Length: 296
Image 1: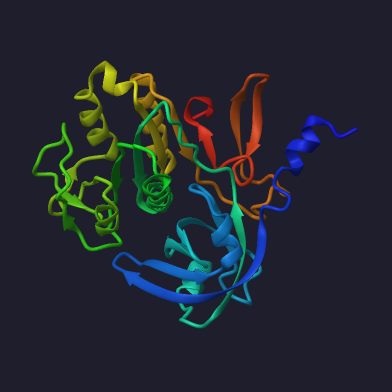
Image 2: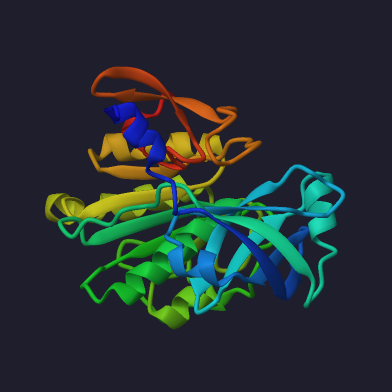
């Protein structure tokens, strides 16, 4: 007889593909940031917002690196990364036509709920890609979502800033810079930074989110669910903000990963479950968790 634990362990079988991808595009942005487009049809077809790939950066480097999926369409995926360490430095050398080995898509995705039709997407730094992927899913869902994305960075954003034509009630009209891709999709977005970038809120993503939430009233708040990805201190602050407003909140955690398929258990975090505290693997049990259950 298969136990519940065994069923849980087997749920990822047949969902993660080993794929030899081809580099279709590799853009460089200020701050040692890169957007990499890879032809990977199996991964692209199965990708969901919040999932990631485990990519081989170089043939001579055995350890792979986890990168969040930013876009997945047709037969290709896109990831955004910032050079940190030898592996990503080697990955940055890849050119169009080069082959790259990847595993993916990996991880439990974000889940939208129709009874919360005002999703608030909060992304910081390299936590921006999952929010873009979620925004893409929202715009293709066909339901009447009324979403807002708040994105923050302390280095130049990996896109050209554009003045938004989409008004957001409750946010100062001077804060009008946005991400062109989200603007094109019809999804309002506002940017934050402490660096004084033009048209951006000077402060943290949680500051601007708090300001927006304050203006909604009880009826508006009852429609909001928060989705977030970014550095752990940011996610902890988002979880605190959600708790203060009594809002459901899903967070995508960042942890160091060796195998990324649940075998090494090197990326475990403590999560509160109905049966009590448990150590969960961020790679396959997450990376998305209910913020209220994370032991921050």
